[in-house]
Length: 214
Image 1: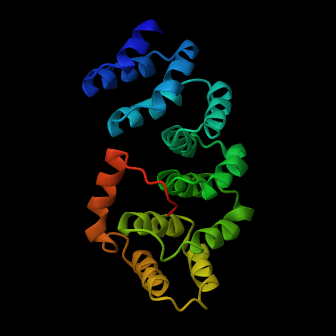
Image 2: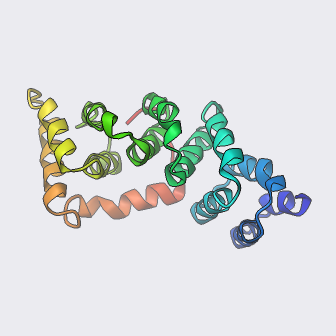
Image 3: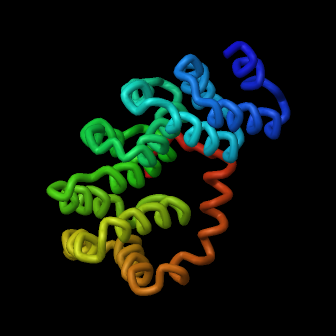
């Protein structure tokens, strides 16, 4: 555990990556708190992905409650990383607390909550989630709109179309344009939003956050 803590502050991300990978190859619950704390501050995207993998190698009954606890942390990265890891965990019992993050004050946390909510949503809440996501159509920059569009489509064509219909009365140009892009994404997943896809990936990789929603 002490060696892992030391590696978490090493300036070389490759050293940090190797340390997290080693912890995942020989998982130990003794590392849980160190890994959770590490998630709050790690600046490198690949290391954060490895932290998720390593955490999910530990016993679910220990990890999932700690991830839920992290959703109450003041650090936006702690909340976002916990949501990301929960989305990979299959912990459908956390749906309610994940859905609560849809109203988070940080835009990156909100975007992450979209994907986590879609991944964990019960069948009887899919329509509700689609409508909640549709409320944000037309808001935010290109990467934000891309994230929202892909989350809507991931709910399934039926839910996505119903969600779009729920804002059919909205005549604002930004909303109409975003609705058209979602429909384009439904029909052409590779082509829609293609110019902004690289930008979105850069934003995520750099861990950029903003203080405003959407």
